[in-house]
Image (tube, rainbow, N blue to C red; front, side, top):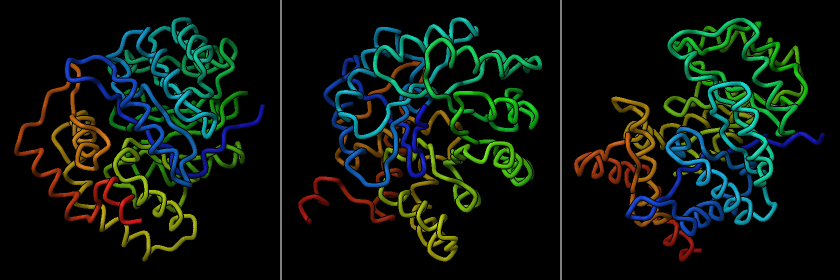
Length: 315
């Protein structure tokens, strides 16, 4: 197995819909092609939270994978969010995603674990079954410390050293754990690629990672690529400068009442950038309203992040 190279930016694209709520394959292909046109984008991770993946039917999910695979034409791997509840269900889901053209799997925890916690050994078995059934390269997904689906260090180490696991998307949002656990993961598996997904406060994690796997990558990929470069160079002043420039957008998109609102805000950001014509979403997401829309648009102006068509014309 040749592991996916994720040492850069891996955006988690939104799913574009038509105004009547159907998957808009033309608009999704446009978004995919724009993102992979930038040097430093290493993969596209679809069908997760930002992509409203659990709001799509199985047929829609597989069709969207095929659209993305065709749009990127081999430039980067397409990684599918695997969200099925049972281990067998998730493994079968992964097998179908592989057949549709996916290369990798971002493995979500069984969502029952968010409330009730998990039994020892169950997460490891979930990853093992997905890899063995589908051959999709797996990404260990570490949920926030505030949830009961946040894996303890022993569980992370067991998963990170299993065959087929090539990276970890870490969103623990507890820096005490981050500073202890990330070095231990790297020690156990030096080849493991560490990816931060702390969209709302990236700066503290930028100096310990191989890359980012973030919904934020939809709306400001150029600046996030620069932020990754600064972090790898251990150039704190430059990283801080980029972070400060992004801060109005970070606040408008991610410092909201619910992280789920960030998905809606991402679509509004893509409208502001001229990639999407509208920000249609699916229930249970709700529109943010005209005031929030104006705030998000103003944040892009404050950060100096312009429309893509204007930038292309300037070149």
